[in-house]
Image 1: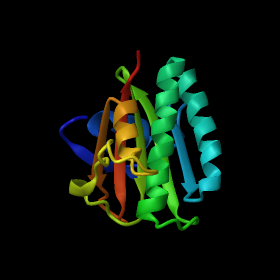
Image 2: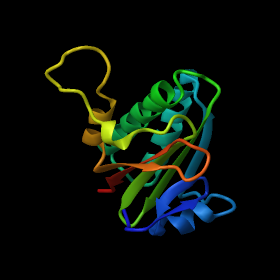
Image 3: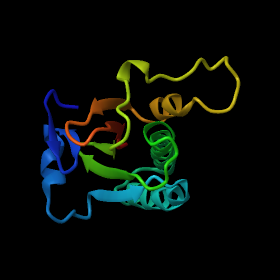
Image 4: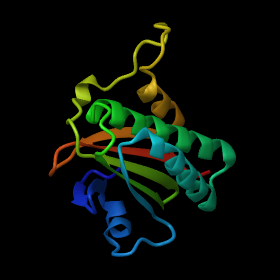
Length: 162
């Protein structure tokens, strides 16, 4: 990520993504989705992200990792930012640029306290609580940014395109 971040197209992104996200009409190389926080819609998001990631040239294993990270991110937004409310907005942008794929997830819910975002101890065997760990394992970087307007959090995950 670049040193400067700007509010652009509904999300905070580093300068190198501004051109891609400012486009009035997304090009074939940018996937932009706006969904409601209903878990029933996650299947469609996973399918669209998978198709897009494969189309930009990622291999099957990297594609599976990106799709899993996106699913975990959206599940966390639904659960933590929106307390399970199924009618809240989530914006997803997938941008391949400069040898990496960035996935930007923007919610308008409760602001995440970045100091408290962490995975639970892996020795603590019980359901749930591993979304952050999974995202960090699947992606090359995971960064949380405060949203400047409208509340919420912006999650930027990147994966090198091999």
